[in-house]
Length: 129
Image (cartoon, rainbow, N blue to C red; front, side, top):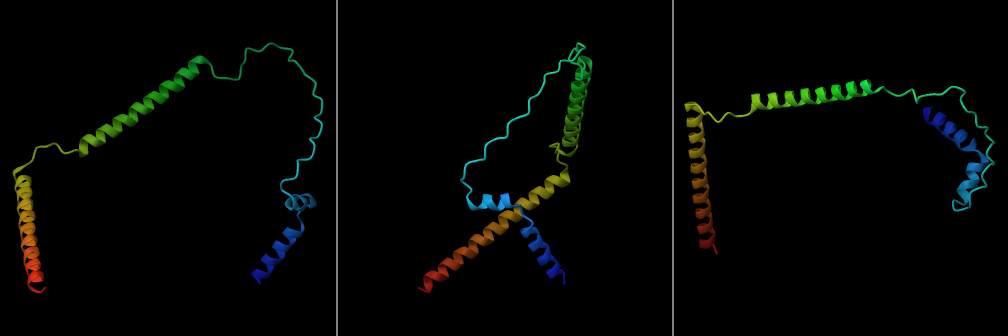
């Protein structure tokens, strides 16, 4: 049912296209129609003199720039404060130093075992040639 409704609506939309749009599809490289003559406008001058009002005054602009600068400084302060609280200090405790040494020894042991296994595999391949 909904497919039929969509089909009917799309057919109505296609048939409702204006004739000008269909004519444009036939030749997209045809020249543009001539422009309509513009209506004559009469110049009216304001009777009162204006000092260009409508813009911001100088003190308002200074306040806006000062607020922007304070905002940027606040964001910078927050970023630096967070970075300092998370950054490592370089002072390792005994437990951290021992854990680091243990990790390094484990890494060297695994590397040595892997090298020995690779040598045995290479020797086995040579024997089986």
